[in-house]
Length: 252
Image (tube, rainbow, N blue to C red; front, top):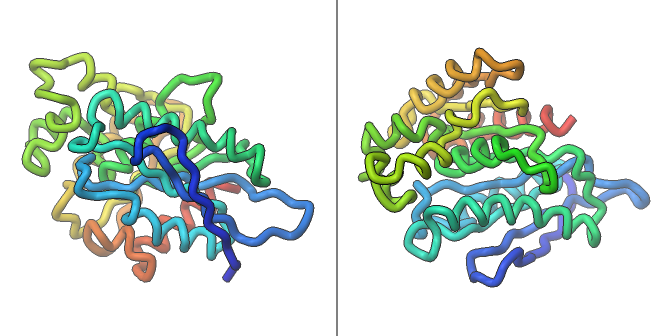
């Protein structure tokens, strides 16, 4: 296992606009081969924070990968539409600033997102931003990848409408803009990993996204793993180990 250092940086003035960079030791004169952006879940609510992503970022660094555990404003502490989305893009773009101080190779930047974080990771990969830091791959861990269906199912007591400030009948534009389905086809490799016994995010969130992606030149791939919703972020569980190896493969 690698030794690693942790560096906290703010990418904006709000208390939730920060990330922690976990860096494994390097051979002198070399650079980290890409960066993993860890985006935590919690149905976009302020009840849950980056402490959910911290064990994953630490584990990735212990396995030789640079990881940026990203915090962002959530619904209930200044987030929602569009702040949560702005923060995720700003947090990813901040890697360009960090690369001035740390030996980061930003030609390969992979997002690892769990649940609502999986939604934000795949959404960010679909943004057309020539000037920003580009995601080159995503591993979605039981991500909420079909926002219209998530709203129809009233997942987590109306979490989608809570995030976007109201129902799609009232705000059709923002619901469309926030939905990863609307960004297909995507020219970025996406693994939609879903836990077999997930009781929090139905598997249709991944299967519908993968099915819709098949018409594109880089279709998403569905990976089913044993365990429940939280097995995916349990660094001792085989479900998480599968995700880590998929990330490692995308970094190569």
